[in-house]
View 1 (cartoon, helix red, strand yellow):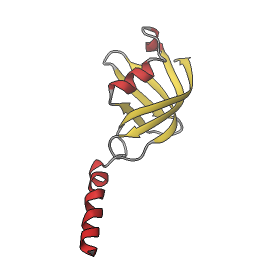
View 2 (view 1 turned 120 degrees about the vertical axis):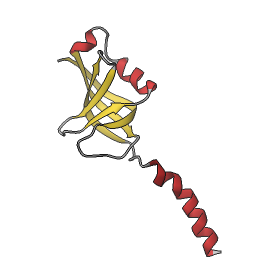
View 3 (view 1 turned 60 degrees about the vertical axis):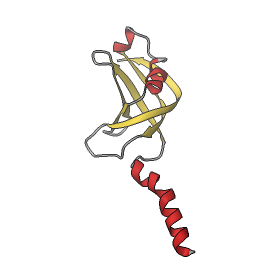
Length: 109
């Protein structure tokens, strides 16, 4: 019986271990759209860490605050709820899905 319970727990935990992603977190950041290559990057204010957006829904959410073609000269400061899709690696930008934007402030850069 004990073996069955251990095996059941192991099977339940496999997706968590394989995903390798960190839990969602709220950060204060600055989002910038680089229109030349349609790249969206979020800098975690106060750190050297950056995130890049990996899905269309997150892109649309951020771009709803930026106004093209002025977006080339705009930055969006806000509290972002980001969900990393890969583990943190020092020196690398981390891929994320943006779930929520709070307290948005659009500024010229």
